[in-house]
Length: 414
Ligand code: AMP
Image 1 (cartoon, protein in one colour):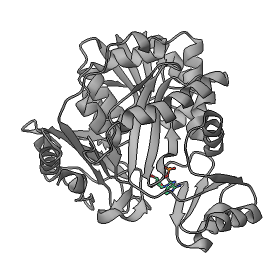
Image 2 (image 1 turned 90 degrees about the vertical axis):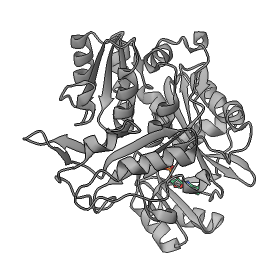
Image 3 (image 1 turned 90 degrees about the horizontal axis):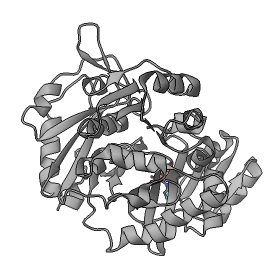
């Protein structure tokens, strides 16, 4: 099987790493990729938002499967010309990707499907926004309706700041605050059959103790020893399957990865958000535990044959990933610094490094090229072991101004 992966972050590196270990995969390509992905796949400098260019590349390569990683190309509709050309593609159509591309659309689908989520108002004027804020009270939750690369959501006690964020967006969703721990649950679907993966938890704030600004995610772990028994079955029955059924009923079937961000509140499980793709950094830990070869699973989703697939097999142990970010992340990440110790971090085989914002320098050195630079992932018999190995690997890597959280999975590992 020849596989082409679209994207160039740590999620795509994790996907490429798993695909490269699948004996069914004979050729692995990635566009545009990064310095780490270059070690396991052939890179192609193609604009990932250009559906015609991606389709031409897939045809030229004779790809048997295209996997679209990030939300931007999905929402831009890159999967559509691929499907029209008869190429199996893992990732939803532009219409179905609106589940992530528009918070208002997602709320409408959830209402239609009877999926539990925060009560909300969609507002387009300052007056409406002010009324919605007062209807719910503090803490205030204000979400830009469109794609905002993790920067669209403000959660604050400060009414003026909440209103300021609302004013900066064309259309906002203002909703009730959901209390309780968060869980990320991914599911692979072909538009009818839904296959949940193992739940994970990520760490959104930049600093230890969940302090500092929101980020794309600073680390993740799986499993969740504290999660209630039967959580996955409950979410499949009340969230994932009804959402997939509703989208099919509307004539916009969703095939690919459906990501439910959940809050386990005192009044029950609620959806915080949907994403239309694998989440970063949870993908690093979820795929680290998947024993079933990945390519066949993604191809079955693309071809609508998931119901025929055997149950997924999982490593019984745990996985932890820790993100190493650049100085100034998330506000003003510094880039262009050489990264030391990448080989040392993987030398004894206990941890592996997945690149996010990196590029190759002129002399073959690896340079920082983004906010989240890389993540170090390890597996172990339990969370304590996986965590110790991930941090041991991380300690070997350095670049100017590197920052990371020291408390990823710490509480869950106790
Ligand atoms: P989102 O992009 O919708 O996942 O929001 C980013 C983060 O903001 C989430 O991971 C939550 O930590 C927080 N958040 C979003 N919506 C709510 C809500 N209704 N109540 C509490 N926290 C929220």
